[in-house]
Structures are given as C-alpha cells and as structure tokens.
Length: 199
Image 1 (cartoon, rainbow, N blue to C red):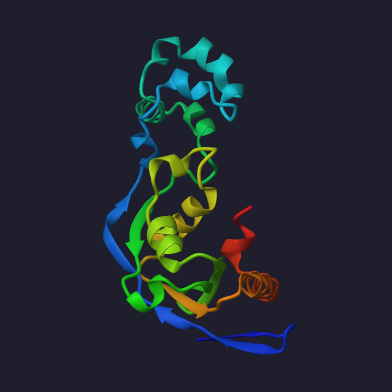
Image 2 (tube, rainbow, N blue to C red):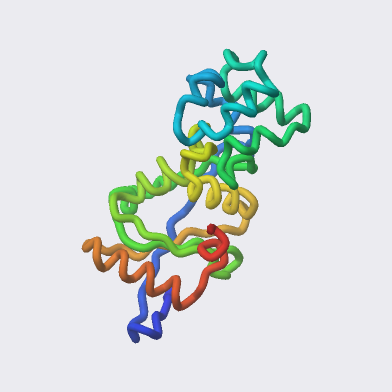
C-alpha cells in the first residue's frame, strides 16, 4: 500500500502485517481488576472525587475487590460504575497479535484499514512487539480505568468490531523525530476517523 503526503510531496510504502486473533471477543475486562478494594482505590487522587458518594451510597461495599464491586453495579444497571472507567473502558475487546518476526522489533508509522478505507494512523517509537502485542492487542483490566490506557481500549474495541475486515500496514523508520513528523503529517493529510474520534 502507498500513502502520498501531498504536504511533503512524498509517497510512502507500507507493508501488510498479518494480525492473528485469539479466541472470541470479550467484555467486562474491568471486572478483573481486583488487586485493591474499593476503599483502597478511593485513596488514589484520581478517584478521590468519588469518595463521598461511595461512602454514602455503598458503605457495605468498601472492602470488596474493586472489579467485583463495579461488575455488581453494572449488573444492577447502576451506571455509577462508569465513573471509575475511561470513556472506552467498558466495550467489547479482542485479543490479537503479530507473529511475523521481521516486524516485531521494528519501529515506524503504522495504519489500520477497514475494507481498504484508512481508519487510523499511529507511530511506534519502541517496537511493534510492544505497540501491538503488549499494547493494543491485549486489554488488561487496569487499562479500562480513568488512570488506564484510553487509546488502547479505544483502538482495540474498534479493531474487535471490524476483526474480519481490518488490516494493519507498516512503514519502517529509524529516527524518532522523523517517525513523529510523518505520523502528524499523515493525520493532517487524511484525517483518519479513529484518530479524530479518539478525543
């Protein structure tokens, strides 16, 4: 695949990178975060604003594991649980990875397409192994919370919804400044919807 950046007057070659999906899509990932109780969580500055409301409305739940407590609220249709999560923290996710060893340790700029329509441009300044296999490709429970990885949850959910049509493309680069510059230029040029809606 080629992407032409009119601003730079340059065309860039992107190689197809096969995505391997494991298992079926899953939900309620947030419910597996049970290393702290509700009360312990409320001591963290990101959750302090919820403390008084929790103490008033759910005093019997303070010693419960956090994920279990939130899942109970969700099942009771009590939307208060959402206030602990980031805006993409309660979606349907998939687990996926790349296996092709020629890309695992590479860095550069990547693109997600759905049925040949460009949906997202991103940069990878460490390695594709970290960015995909250990990042977007697996949503850990902690990612779902307000102090978690909003972008990982957002992209994984988008990819999960399009798993039969989504493809990953990659342009290898070495210099961090050039990687960042090309990512910004391509986003400006193409305005990919998943970048714009991430907000």
